[in-house]
Length: 77
Image 1 (tube, rainbow, N blue to C red):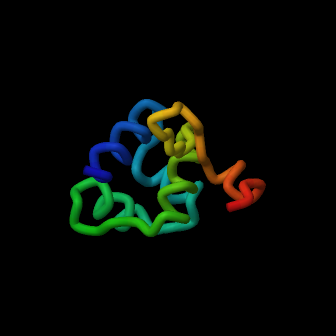
Image 2 (cartoon, rainbow, N blue to C red):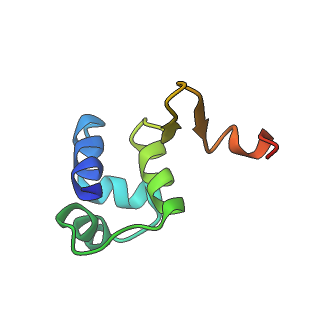
Image 3 (cartoon, rainbow, N blue to C red):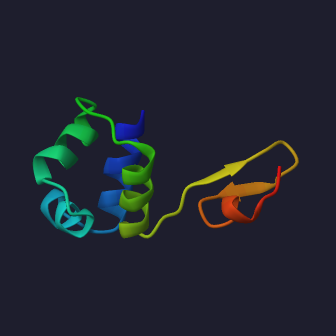
Protein backbone atom coordinates (compact mmCIF):
# COMPACT_ATOMS: atom_id res chain seq x y z
CA UNK A 1 0.00 0.00 0.00
CA UNK A 2 2.81 2.45 0.84
CA UNK A 3 4.22 1.76 -2.61
CA UNK A 4 1.21 3.38 -4.29
CA UNK A 5 1.44 6.44 -2.06
CA UNK A 6 5.12 6.92 -2.86
CA UNK A 7 4.61 6.55 -6.60
CA UNK A 8 1.59 8.86 -6.60
CA UNK A 9 3.37 11.55 -4.55
CA UNK A 10 6.40 11.38 -6.85
CA UNK A 11 4.32 11.64 -10.02
CA UNK A 12 2.20 14.48 -8.62
CA UNK A 13 5.44 16.33 -7.83
CA UNK A 14 6.58 15.80 -11.42
CA UNK A 15 9.73 13.97 -10.37
CA UNK A 16 11.46 10.98 -11.91
CA UNK A 17 12.66 8.19 -9.66
CA UNK A 18 16.21 9.42 -10.18
CA UNK A 19 15.34 13.02 -9.25
CA UNK A 20 13.54 11.91 -6.08
CA UNK A 21 16.38 9.58 -5.16
CA UNK A 22 18.92 12.40 -5.48
CA UNK A 23 16.80 14.72 -3.34
CA UNK A 24 16.45 12.03 -0.66
CA UNK A 25 20.10 10.94 -0.88
CA UNK A 26 19.20 7.33 -1.70
CA UNK A 27 19.60 5.24 -4.85
CA UNK A 28 17.04 5.21 -7.63
CA UNK A 29 16.86 1.41 -7.31
CA UNK A 30 15.76 1.91 -3.72
CA UNK A 31 12.97 4.25 -4.86
CA UNK A 32 12.00 1.68 -7.48
CA UNK A 33 11.90 -1.00 -4.79
CA UNK A 34 9.65 1.17 -2.64
CA UNK A 35 7.29 1.82 -5.55
CA UNK A 36 7.01 -1.84 -6.52
CA UNK A 37 6.55 -3.01 -2.95
CA UNK A 38 9.77 -5.02 -3.01
CA UNK A 39 11.10 -2.85 -0.17
CA UNK A 40 9.49 -0.62 2.45
CA UNK A 41 11.03 2.60 3.76
CA UNK A 42 11.44 3.26 7.45
CA UNK A 43 9.28 6.06 8.81
CA UNK A 44 12.02 8.70 8.69
CA UNK A 45 12.67 7.93 5.00
CA UNK A 46 8.95 8.02 4.23
CA UNK A 47 8.64 11.44 5.87
CA UNK A 48 11.60 12.67 3.82
CA UNK A 49 10.14 11.32 0.56
CA UNK A 50 6.81 12.99 1.32
CA UNK A 51 8.55 16.28 2.13
CA UNK A 52 10.58 16.23 -1.08
CA UNK A 53 7.36 15.64 -3.03
CA UNK A 54 5.60 18.55 -1.31
CA UNK A 55 3.49 16.45 1.08
CA UNK A 56 3.44 15.92 4.82
CA UNK A 57 2.33 12.93 6.83
CA UNK A 58 -0.45 13.55 9.34
CA UNK A 59 -2.36 11.30 11.68
CA UNK A 60 -5.90 12.41 12.41
CA UNK A 61 -7.99 10.92 15.21
CA UNK A 62 -11.77 10.66 15.32
CA UNK A 63 -11.97 14.14 16.92
CA UNK A 64 -10.02 15.58 13.96
CA UNK A 65 -6.98 16.31 16.10
CA UNK A 66 -3.88 16.28 13.91
CA UNK A 67 -0.58 14.80 14.93
CA UNK A 68 2.41 15.17 12.61
CA UNK A 69 6.18 15.24 12.70
CA UNK A 70 6.15 18.99 13.42
CA UNK A 71 3.85 18.99 16.43
CA UNK A 72 4.59 15.61 18.03
CA UNK A 73 7.59 17.08 19.85
CA UNK A 74 5.36 19.70 21.50
CA UNK A 75 2.76 17.19 22.73
CA UNK A 76 2.97 16.24 26.38
CA UNK A 77 1.49 12.86 27.19
